[in-house]
Image (cartoon, rainbow, N blue to C red; front, side, top):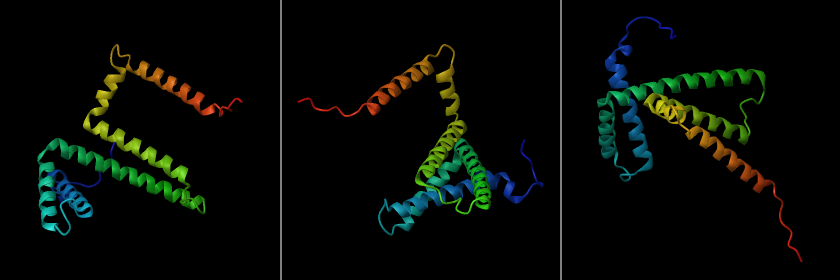
Amino acid sequence: MAVQYGGFTILSSPFFVEALLPFLLIFSLVFAILQKSEVLGKGKKQTDALIALSVGLLAVAFGQAVGIILQMVAFLSVAVVILLVFMLLTATLFKDALVLNKTVQIGIGILIFIAVAIAALVYTGGWSYIEDLFAGSGSSVLTNAVFIIIIIGAIAAVIMTGGKEKPSS
């Protein structure tokens, strides 16, 4: 259960939460991407701004898109706070806690990718579709997928553990 603090403020009004803030986020992101990539040409700030404006307004025009944006930003905020607390706690325990080797960085990157993918699927409704596909009544997709993974794993194990063949003379 979420804890609510205070009462109604101007920043919690539907105009800000459902229109202005998502528009500013989308406009800023699209404008920055267009400026950095120079897709439309170098020094085309006005064109980049007009396209970013159009994309931002179109995004805000669709309630479902705004809902997904708000949920993903809330997920991002909570995840960043959790990461910050983790980093602060490990920094107090270990001298070089924030110096991670490449394997740990890749592992954390994979976990972040999985978390964002699952969050996006849940917020867009795709998770229930995948759930029905694998666990629906009479579905054998999950069983077949498990057997295919086992077979691929067995073949990979045989190939990787096999030594080099010596030529016979």
